[in-house]
Image 1 (tube, rainbow, N blue to C red):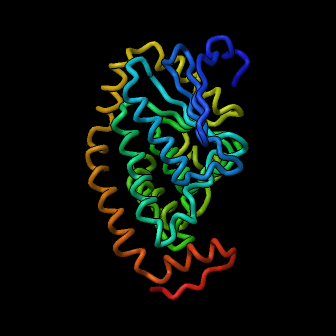
Image 2: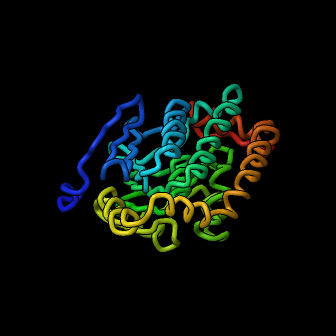
Length: 270
């Protein structure tokens, strides 16, 4: 946090759960949610549930004006748990993960992502769903699912909204990683600075805290009204495509298995 913000952003309450830390600032008008499962802050089922519970709670807090989402340690998030992508657990994993995004949208609370280090896979899906992304100059962002033989349902829904179809296709089909400067140039990242948490909090303090909390929620819902309506159907269709078709292929299972076994996949192209 920046030196100059310490006085105005003193923590009023801190709640420690298993993998998610919540700090309440400005008398509860600002929440800082910290993914706290270093080193990679993997979005496994437990952390996803805690995030979902936090956004359920956020929807019930009438004075809450903004949530800043960040990661403890050197990284924002390595993404969703690869182990939970295996055939015996992938359906439950996707259901819980996609419910999280429905709850974020339904809460109506503006969310700012403060990104350091790796922001990959499910981590980039989570950051991209936020209203703004503040990144450290050395941050790396990517949607590498295709390298494991699978695809990113939420990323497939949100990235084109954020950066346009061409850049979204680049990220989703190549699986490559962008450094912060390139991500900023294409519009994936909104701001680059040495202190992304402080930058996000400063932006919120200047632009959101002076507003009415109830009006902010209406404005947030209105700004994404069409997308949120389409997202509800789209993510359900993509979840079925993933489970009913993708996971029936040999290569999807091979890609996940090869990653867990730390070897190169042997694609059968089927």
